[in-house]
Length: 104
Picture 1 (cartoon, rainbow, N blue to C red):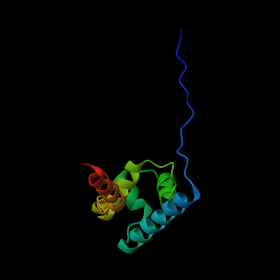
Picture 2 (picture 1 turned 90 degrees about the horizontal axis):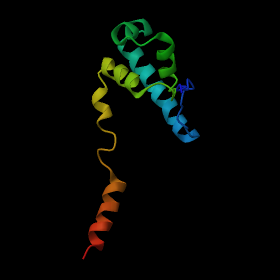
Picture 3 (picture 1 turned 120 degrees about the horizontal axis):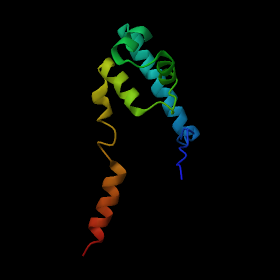
Picture 4 (picture 1 turned 120 degrees about the vertical axis):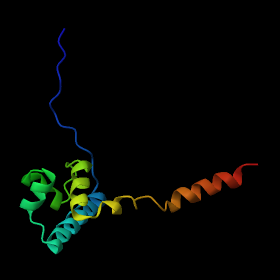
């Protein structure tokens, strides 16, 4: 019995609010490139990311892998900004404090 592999690409469901945030990320990356004088050609040569994928990144396309976004951030010198995500997890700390207060 042979195994049939699905060639259908799985895509994440991205809701409108998150889509808007991705669009903003794409705009911010585009502006950062322009401020630094980094063209799409330069970004392509430094990351190896295809130009169509770079265009998708500039639009905040959710189908682009996080790894590609990381490579672009690295070229822009902004990779450390990624470590700031969830660093100060206010909601998580409040939930943890509630649990700690309820323990007797």
